[in-house]
Length: 184
Image (cartoon, rainbow, N blue to C red; front, side, top):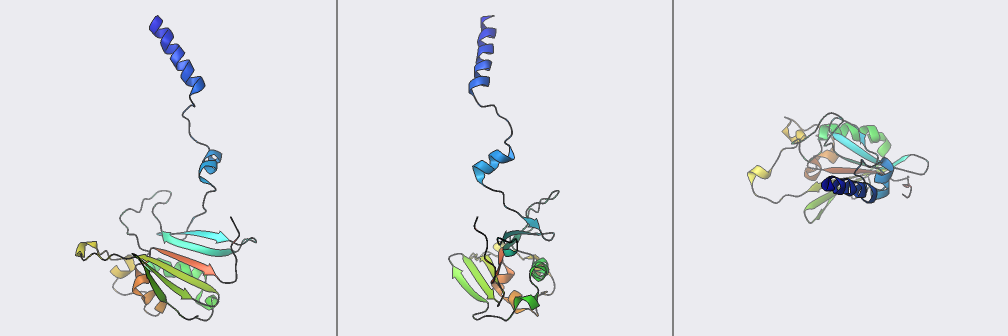
């Protein structure tokens, strides 16, 4: 009887003084981690995280490999962007005609530690391609990207996609020249 009484008192103390372990609400998660990021699935293997101006126009977009969708995990697909899909998505976001004249220097690559940043600036838009650099001499460490594994490069006519750093890009940022992103 005494053990039952101690057990009941212990349970009551735990219920009263220790926060119950329940699922967190969206409001609690936002309070802890901040406002959720909007991400769009723009093709089968690409996601886009946009930023907007005060009047709602897209001013910057980051494109990166999709890792999951509602019903699929894309494990082992690779860390680089599929250039076939990327070219289509970039054309949808900003067609070659809308980009304007090329600005110089065009297609300049900066090597920063183990990262390459390649920038293509047009009058109306800038593309920034980010790639990891792997200086390993191991043949096993080289993985072909989906575009490299195809028999021919889909971008042969487009010098933007002919750059070797672009072919191994992991993130592409598109920035519009005439649009200022809203402060967060």
